[in-house]
Image (cartoon, rainbow, N blue to C red):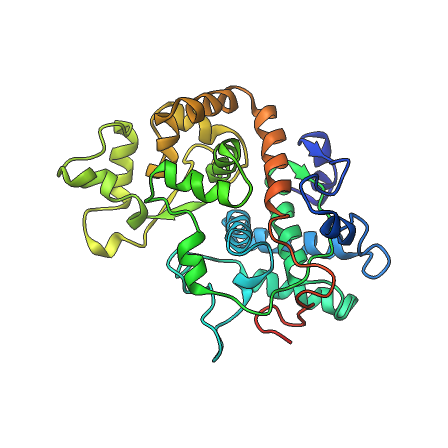
Length: 334
């Protein structure tokens, strides 16, 4: 872990991105609502409160940076960045928490709750849960020595959530690359975003059920995936024996630098050591394989383009103005 003084000096070691505009692709209406200085007067210590909350969470759980980033990604990919993933089920809707991609795997809700409580003490009914989650994901990556990107603020929270939308819209590691790419394109993203955002798998873990078929019965062959590095195959079989009670065991997505945000994920793909099928599949297409190769050789390029893709992601389908609300409790509508 890093000391407090080290954190304050990290900007000299990570790539910084400060877009000239809040987001070039936003409509003029939304652009007029979002602003880098949105809370400067109404909640001037917001970023500090969020950073401290994330830092505290990481100190207790080194998996939390990946969990917060994934929580944010899964929120934005389902009907836009609106905090809908944070809502508990109600009598009027079944939310996203128990959708297949999130059930027993999405984490970090309590971290956002704790940060929200501290923000409410400082600035009651002022900051949306969506903005808190957006900032928390940025801080989580920054605190693992990843890139830093500026965040326009002023998002509002949704009034509902949809389990079926989460099941339909979220990319799955079991899908072919063409399907995953199509889902990204439907959100205004592109092939480069698919590859560079997949680089987030340089941190975090996956449950064995997500890749076990690669170890024992790939495509129904009764044999392991022939593209999987043999040394990795052996170590994964020890973590994930061929029995159902190992399904929830965890393996690191990047076993080389488990808790550091870097470009080693792409080096792993070059060495046939991608954990998920959807990761290693990036090497089966000329366009995506070329991007993987570039990022594996150039960590600065990866940092720069990851930050740029995150700026695109965080502005998908945002609610502003009179749309939505500022929730007092991230789990329920007001």
